Length: 114
Length: 114
Image (cartoon, rainbow over all chains, first blue to last red):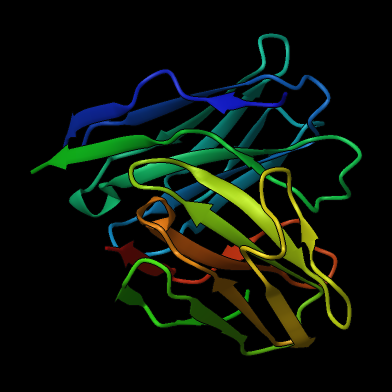
């Protein structure tokens, strides 16, 4: 079946460093991808999304890169801050679901040290 | 985006009882969904809450265990029936607004079953 996985369950960085969180997806026909941030005790918060017809999209301090050749998605956070500490999930929208279903990855915990 | 209110935020329940979780949105939304997040894990879609008709359940989830109501475009409930400790999870309401792809989440209900 479809699955989305992450290479690193925990990523520890120093404040001010750039962080890169990776995600592998299995369905080459997925057409839409999202990154979410989940802080302790809260629901997932939308960070950034990207369609399959793009390979890069930038937001405020965040960049998502999509490599369809190797089915890889990454989230780059510039100048990481302690407030960025959270669990990050990638999610993919499988084809023919009309954006009605997202498949979530297992999550990566980002720990930012001051 | 939409403001999604979920209650209760947390509860501790006895085995064999049922709990109904409410989700209220501050605007009319096209799609409402219920997700489960088991301890330390990712999000799994339980069902799509359909306004005026029976919910659409994902594989592994059944109406008898997770009855869902959606009487209008801003409100839905999820009941976790005949609970067991295995039902201890975070239950999350999510919505999609308009024709956009983004999925927004409530803050979740932390359920512990003793």
